[in-house]
Length: 167
Image: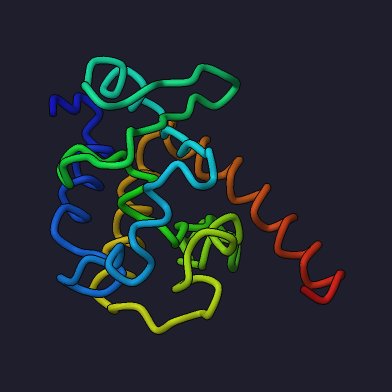
């Protein structure tokens, strides 16, 4: 894959050989439910990814305010979009002491499709660190930083709503 955006290229490299369960395929836990058509979902693309996935076989890019990509259920690990590489986590942008920081959280959108997320399983710390470092790389680029900030605001509101509803 030809990744022109430096921050995105660095994030991809960090997450190339790690999974939530270390070197083990987390899809073996749930029969790769997140990759199946069971949910009919697609994964959000980060800025600069649309151009990559429009040309890759086995992927369908869906245009919208935030472009998404849908796969045919199987792909080469090295061809996964960033959202799949960090799943079921998200590098949340938080503000502490007047500075932006990256805090890795379980993505609340993953609860319905990931048993690791639903049960708050202990994930491989190398994976969690890689997601955090990827977030730090991504926030260096203004385009991907804007995406992280906007998604972080949405996820924070979602988490606050879940707390209020007692979920």
